[in-house]
Length: 142
Image 1 (tube, rainbow, N blue to C red):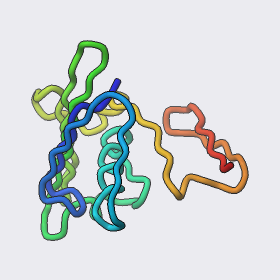
Image 2 (image 1 turned 60 degrees about the horizontal axis):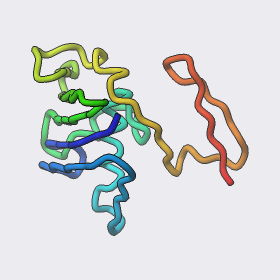
Image 3 (image 1 turned 135 degrees about the vertical axis):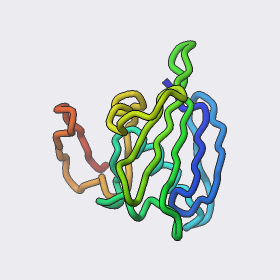
Image 4 (image 1 turned 30 degrees about the horizontal axis):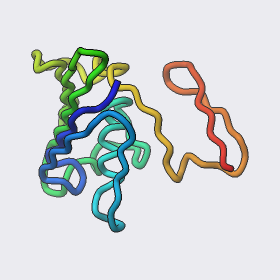
């Protein structure tokens, strides 16, 4: 599976961004504070419905807005899946799969699969942590 396209509306610092991607490794390069981590956070949020940076959804919404939209086009084999997640300030988040009728956000769980390595996940010694799905995640520093 790979992420073919990412689109964000009112997510963190982005009013609107469309990012086409290709299979293989993608490297985001730029000055501090331009939004590289925001892109990764959006992908991670779509996969897990939680942020690795904050405990509530409010900081994910661009200042002055009451909702954000994360849209991703995933390719697995020859099949394309479009996921949309609407993050709302004052009501439940909603999702869509392949532009269907709105579904509960949690119905998107498991469709987009990610592995996150972030500065806060590295520890000085090896650590095994259980995940929500019951599997485990290994983190270590070299």
